[in-house]
Amino acid sequence: MLDPNPFELLRDLAGGYLLPRCLHVVADLGVADALGDTPLTAAELAPLVNADRDSLHRVMRLLAGHGVFEMRNDCFGHTAASRLLCSDHPQSMRAFARMMGLGFNWATLGKLDHTVRTGRPAGDEVMPGGIWAWIEGRPEESAIFNGAMAGKAHGQVAGVLRSYDFSRFGVIGDIGGGRGHLLRGVLDAVPAARGLLFDLPHVIDEAATLASSRATLVPGDFFKDALPVCDAYLAMEVIHDWADPEALAILQAIRRAAPVDATLLLIEVIVPDEPGPDWAKTLDVLMLVLLGGRQRTVEEYRSLLDRADFSLARTIDTGAGISILEARPV
Image 1 (cartoon, rainbow, N blue to C red):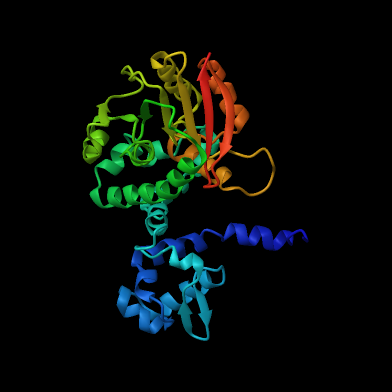
Image 2 (cartoon, rainbow, N blue to C red):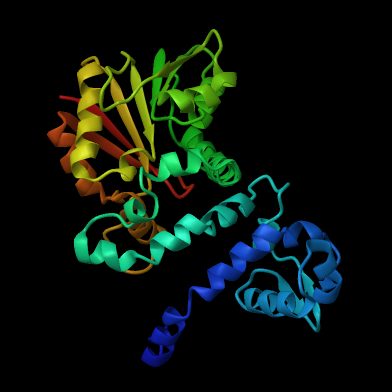
């Protein structure tokens, strides 16, 4: 493959934010839902989504040039990518695209220079009190965010369940497990197991429907409260929210609770050692600017685990864009 023309590379990168913004807007408008199976012109689509016909045509033309929608003459039809923007698609990405376009993301990324200069997350400047409190206080944004996380988790959880045998565990704790998408999947797959969902009190309230004779909801703060005793501990995309001191404190809290024969499963997007584009590197900068967190390489996770008195046994690529790091107490 020929190296890209340097001028074109920098030109496209400098103006590249326009492309994702177009995606956010058509996802927010519900264009994919309105399109259906029959190609339509922008003039036909515009009244269905309350948009201006010329503006919609030009935005969709740009997206079609990148494989989101297909443009033939003046008509737009679906592609495999645009179908993922449909609300009823089993692997729908609509909520995720809408979430990435929420104002707090754009405002925070607009202050990336603050983070690069100071090392502190710009999210603290945009959202005093932190992102979780900001989202919790805004019902519409919270619904979009929760929908995005649920949709993303759907594919990831399926990959985790395909890649790991949970049947040897009697009690499985999901630490910082949100609304219990992962724990619900694991308990469905292992009927003999019992589960514990540990998260902040307001999150546990939102996960109330998970509670059953096999699933116990435990409110608490892993920086302050003792964690439950379990055979296995799951932490899915929890550690990446935090810088090393806080990440280490979470792992140490799990270690204090963990029996000597317990297993810890960190489920995270791993930064590859190889150069080149990778979603993990994009996500890493997003975690940096929003939360001060970070995506890590396998060796960086190994180092954190060692400091928390865990030994990394193996890393499993689930094939769903996320990996399982299996560790044991030492």
